[in-house]
Image (cartoon, rainbow, N blue to C red):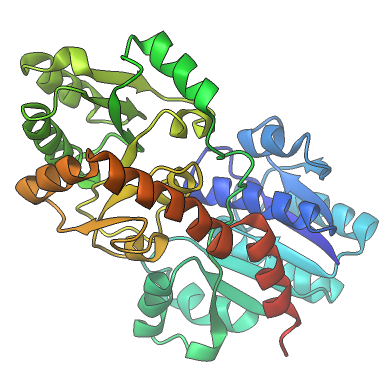
Length: 358
């Protein structure tokens, strides 16, 4: 099949990561893929070496004719079987191009906050396929009146090669950060914001550090609370066992350095890509039992689901995961779980199956 992906968002968001991963998954599965993307943006750079033909363009809004011209030009070159969109600002342009060129369109919705009244009603009904990225998100759309038959679920695909365990890379990263090679490393990957549960995690980690001297914590990400969490760490007793790396463009190598990943959100999450990527690298996950997060792991098999905001429960779970046999057994199961449910191979096949389902 031939696909034209359209995503001119210049920012590195979860939806952008999904856009890139799904496009790459379709190429790996043998399909022909072109993409209309923001010129020199992160999406374009990530797709450059993937066998995807790039058409640079910008959609500022639904009235931006330059975006229409670029999309129509790309479609006439490729003659796609499907248009694919990931970002709200392009829903209506893609629906209009779909009607103009008689090419069906598949649209993904990554957020649960409602669209405007008109868009919320019409977009799922006018797109030939409308996708949620979790069952939790799908239910949110159904609760707003979207007919069940119009909302399909397709999870984020994960490249197993990018996330595979790498003992040498682990050793190199630990050495660079001054972390002992026998350390137990818990990692946080994401936005530094209170809604992500970072303060709960800090309290839990420091409580666990009083009992486990090998425990270190690696923080990857940035956000409005980065300075505040850094100041709390510096004021505590274990500052030398915390490692704040800030924003990392490619976090995949760092998963190999983790003994476990923490996903401590206290606000509802639509999905939880970092949970799946960490498991693909053989790191079990401690995750909040909230929103779509439980769909990213097998509870008590590849990780643990915990009450959001409950620091004592998180401390106890961290200490449990510090036990080598528990951690290693879950880590092995985690990679197999992701391969069966979220690998690019599985998601590409499922995407085509849904598109072909009449």
